[in-house]
Image 1 (cartoon, rainbow, N blue to C red):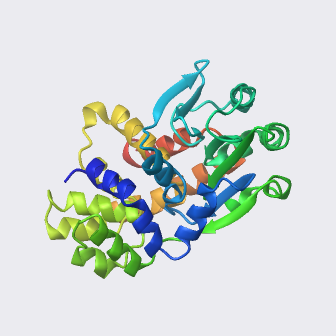
Image 2 (cartoon, rainbow, N blue to C red; image 1 turned 120 degrees about the vertical axis):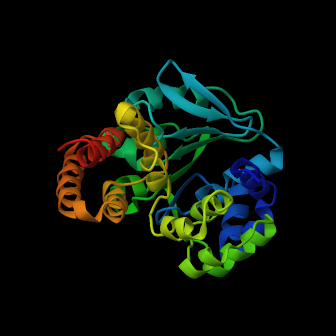
Length: 313
């Protein structure tokens, strides 16, 4: 069974899945009633925010997301029910004014399927870091004909004036028992090695299940030690002749996964224990540069870290 097939099963069975995860069904039903203005979903790394709104909507209306680009800058997904902008995807515009213009264009037209447009902004903290004032304009000026669902893994870095525009809802990870029940619903094996690791990351559980068909138990056990299994998987295939292109591709994948410099460094230390000092020094310097930057350059810093460890002398 492919990963795509597994995720399709999750979408089809999302109502059952939300019923078994503590609090998810209540939050999802609240969102699906559209009886709110602006919602900010926040939680720890790998909290499955899409379980609460995206998958229920896709399942209810039997829609698929269409990828679009507005004025050659703003990358977004569109369905008849919602517009979705992910600030974290590679090549997404860092010009927040353009995002404001896009939303202004959307809300200037009447919504045909509901009383207001539904606009999703994933990883909103990235746009906030670049231009907090423009995000405040969106939430204050362009909310008469739109409601917003935004998500973040960095709640603590969002300033109070912006938080005050939202109804903030904390999303927890599914418990170990709930993860096992999800596996039963979507008919995949809850592997003993996953049970032993007490993994609460549904993305990793599905990935490990898929990988288990191709590797032995020793490799699986090692993969579970990593924050993101795509790091050891991709670095194991690195070829010196194309290392730059391969590291850039991996950087894009890690950015989409919303990984941070410290978490990537932890995985690199696990992979290259003899280079601990070098990795820690590089990660500390690069993470500091990332914090001081104006935002929107996360992929560059991730690629810089990978090159510092794997390419530079």
